[in-house]
Length: 271
Image (cartoon, rainbow, N blue to C red; front, side, top):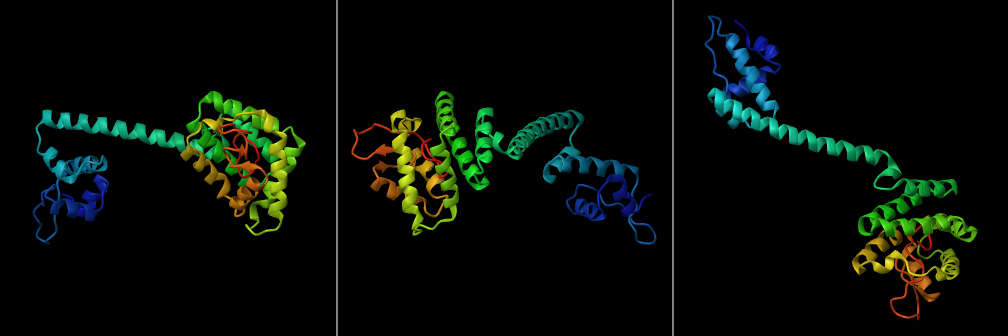
């Protein structure tokens, strides 16, 4: 005969759990010996192990109570149902593990190889990681709303921009401006430089941003403009210099619907 501590140890639970199962009516309370202690037999160990396994599988205690009293056929059917549920939960957890692994991979999260290589070029140019992450997040959103063909075209365009010394110089300046406040006197000069780059690349024609809904354009704008304190003022100053919008850039006064340049982020001019 076993004490409650021995029973709990053999079944892999605590003595407190044994008392809880007694209170729930799952495990019958045995008689006491002449010293007033409960004494358990081998059947109590088997019953307690069955209770623990069912409870560990997520079966509610009320259902455990039913299963302990079910016949062999009913018990087998219930176990098959529990197994099916556990398999589904395992598959879902595996999907979560895959997502976590992709998060740990950094730039490879939802980005094609050419996208990760593109961001690596930013780092080689000395762009701060905070700005690289803003650019990466913008591309992740781009992949969610545009076709693969549109994304590939936009990515190729941005890759060519990195070969332009004027654009690279502007990129570094925008990186330095991350900490500037809206009233910083240097913002006006930065707006001049951004406008000059937009003017230089205006002939590249329509960008993918021209096909976006207004709500998506605003979403892209928020990623870019709200990431730096001077972002909204820079947008306003650009309009004074002949460029309206940020993600969907348009020449002020040009024919309606015509897009000049394509997407940008806080860390870039035309995208």
